[in-house]
Each structure stands twice: as structure tokens, then as C-alpha cells.
Image 1 (cartoon, rainbow, N blue to C red):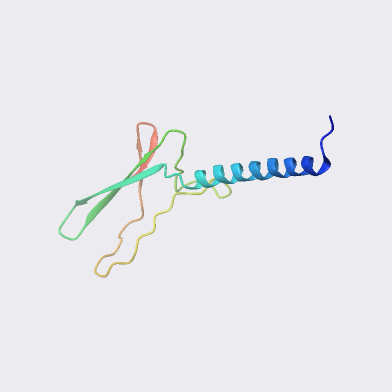
Image 2: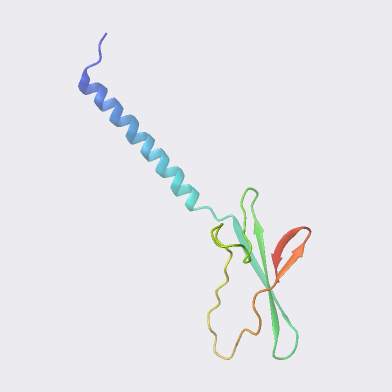
Length: 105
């Protein structure tokens, strides 16, 4: 039994279209992942100063990279703060080590 060349072409096109759509859907799903959840606390150290502490909870299989890594590697973690009238940042973000993991304080 021979397959009609037109039917074979349609089957190939359908296969490639299905493969393309499957690949795109997997890519889109990967982009929608939100593996890091952030929380924060503030502690007043005086009447004019406070410490902000940010904590990241990271799902298994995901990584959050330090701010202090060499250029050319993975994307460094960055913090951006909006300017608020009447407030100023006195120090940079400090890194603290906890149970062998790197965190920020």
C-alpha cells in the first residue's frame, strides 16, 4: 500500500506543527514559574534608623545567586528601591551566612 504524497506532506506538516506547539507551551510554562517567595521584616535600631531584612524561600531545584559573583556567570541577585521622600539608605545590602547557605540581612 502506498501513501499519497499529498497526504504524507500533510502528515509531516501536522507532526511539525504539533511539535512546535508543544515546545512553545513548555517554554511558556517555564517562564510563568514563580519559584522564589519573598518576605521582609523591619527592626527599628533607633528613632531614625531601621534594618530591613529580606528572606527568600526557594522551591527545590531552583537557585538564587549571590550579589557577589564574577561577571560572565549567572545573573546576580539585585535589589532596587524606590526613592521615598524623607528616607535615605545609609548602607548597602549586607550578606549573612546561615547554615551553609547565603542569605541577606
